Length: 212
Image (cartoon, rainbow, N blue to C red):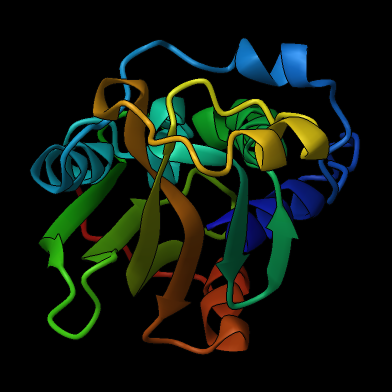
C-alpha cells in the first residue's frame, strides 16, 4: 500500500519529505504514541486487527491502532522493509493529503476476506484482504489488489520503552505481572497476489469505468 501511494504521489508531482527508515526518536516521545489500550489476549488482538480492515480501512485511511504494535516492529511489503512504529505511522500520515484527493469517500474500499490465528504458527495472526479504488486522476486508473498480511506478535511490557541493559539483566530472574504485559505485533509482513510491478502498473493504466 505504501509503495502504491508513493507512486501516486510522484505521478501527481507533489513534493513531500522522505520518511526516515530508522527509529530515531527518544523513548519518551515514542511512548506518547500509545493510547493506553493494549491487547491483552490473542482473541482481543485478532478482533482489533480485523477492525483495522473492516472499520478503519487503514490501507486507504492510514488510521492505525498504535497500541497493537511494538515500537520496533519490522514492517515489510513487496517493495520495502523498515523498522519502527513511528516511521510506519508517519509514512501513512504523510500520504493522506494525496490519497484523500485522488481516492475520496465512495471511491475506495477495503474488503477483509479472512482474519484469524495461523494454523501453523501460534504467534501469528493472518489477514486476507482486497483493496479497491477508482482513482480521481485524468486517466481514471483503478486499483484492485488482493493481499495477505501476517502479524507476528509476542508478549511484552505495557510500558515498552526500553530499559537500560543492566536494569534488564538485574530483573532477569523476576516474574512479570500479567497485568503489566500485553500482546504486540513485532513483525508486519504484507504480500500481494500480484507482483509489485503488476500492482504499480495499475496506476498508469486507463480503466473504462461504468457510468455512475
